[in-house]
Length: 374
Image (cartoon, rainbow, N blue to C red; front, top):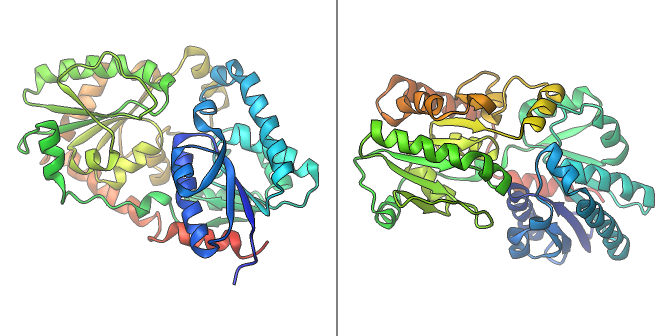
């Protein structure tokens, strides 16, 4: 039996973290139903029973320059979060991804010397940049939980004992057995390819990507008559303009399981596409200064987590100046033909990728690991 846990403070700062944190809370409640949850997060965490202190809408910022721009607000949220933790005195603190904020919070919590154990779930990708952060983590983190097999080995080699239970996305099932509603809803024809557009979950990503996506679709429609396009839209972002020939879908599962190919902003969504056997062209564009800083600090060969896990390029990447309609069309065209050798080869790579990500029951294993000692 796990020790009695009266309260947990959990912190996520972005949409993907909100989703994973909510599932973790549900798994923790199944083991410890009387535990109360407080923290920073989004609607998914609120639905799972977390009393939200600060919403992710006020916290989700990406990019070096954007963080500096919003730093005063984030600093106030950090101070208020620390005060809330002092007031609530939770038995455990769980930090989910969002390293710029959460590592600072971990340092502040340890300085309080209140004996609250800190668990970090979805570890900072310091193997890509800012490796010096390992010193902070070794001083402040009591439990480390990775979602990538190669990452566990990296952290353990650096002296931070790290647990790996599998990747959360392995829990999703993508089966095209409920496609009638999807095709009827968008008035799509089943004998024509469906292109899925994923321009990003943050408005600043949308602002950089959407104009290029629109130009790409405009050119693709000329070269590929009958192409059907649908964009997966996050509820808190604006897409403008929105042409009538591009349909809007809010369910990523419905779109991915019925898509032929995808153009996707780099991020967790690229791995979701792989899990759904959806061949994808990865794109990303940022401000020029952010791009310069990324190149100075970055240590990774690939920007897509799919290619990083595979340790080779299995899906195309078009970053910054290479993200043009011409280049995207060249890479996506073979994927729109379900019989093309390139498409079939990519799907085979996806099959091998899934085998490396573990078995179902990830959140149950993580919940048991977190609660096994207080």
